[in-house]
Length: 158
Ligand SMILES: CC(C)(COP(=O)(O)OP(=O)(O)OC[C@H]1O[C@@H](n2cnc3c(N)ncnc32)[C@H](O)[C@@H]1OP(=O)(O)O)[C@@H](O)C(=O)NCCC(=O)NCCS
Image 1 (cartoon, protein in one colour):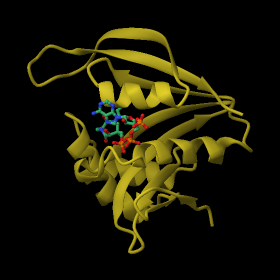
Image 2 (cartoon, helix red, strand yellow):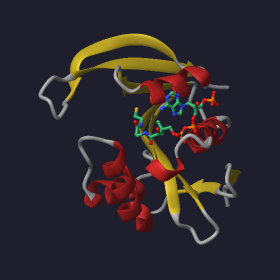
Image 3 (cartoon, helix red, strand yellow):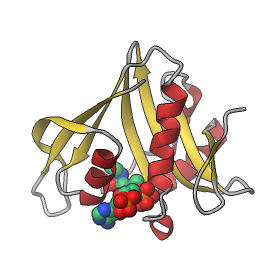
Image 4 (cartoon, protein in one colour):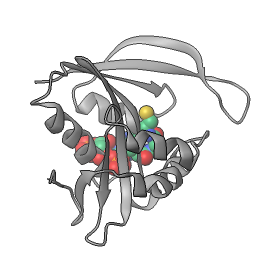
């Protein structure tokens, strides 16, 4: 079984369909627009959209990352850590688990989109080797009605 170490006594393992509810809950805590549990269930049953969960010994899910893999490219679809557990290196460990898992695969490059008003995530991505390759104006809906710009970032793997 795939297993990666994470800070705070946690570990990272592949997500499974039974994690759909936990992922939907964590996602809703991290984003203005949540995804329904049924969407997560579909993703978790597909091999093209692998998920990585950071959890404790009782398999309580604290954070997760999910990819979409197609040919030699991967996209970071989403990553979220429980607000009470942020700033402890769990997001970084999740990202590194995805890189390691893809190391022996044909995937050469990872892409992601991040809101320009999300400094925590941008800091993490830059630190982990992602560089901005483009921008999409008005990409993310916001509660105040003023949509936020998306930065498109990429990183070579391997
Ligand atoms: C983005 C997110 C996943 C990061 O997870 P995390 O576990 O808190 O991140 P880490 O503790 O691994 O932090 C990694 C780096 O980012 C930095 N960082 C974390 N929070 C930060 C903040 N609020 N502002 C600036 N930098 C921050 C840390 O300092 C750390 O750098 P360091 O190693 O130099 O100290 C988490 O903040 C989250 O779930 N946010 C809501 C959902 C979201 O925005 N996801 C990304 C959308 S693209």
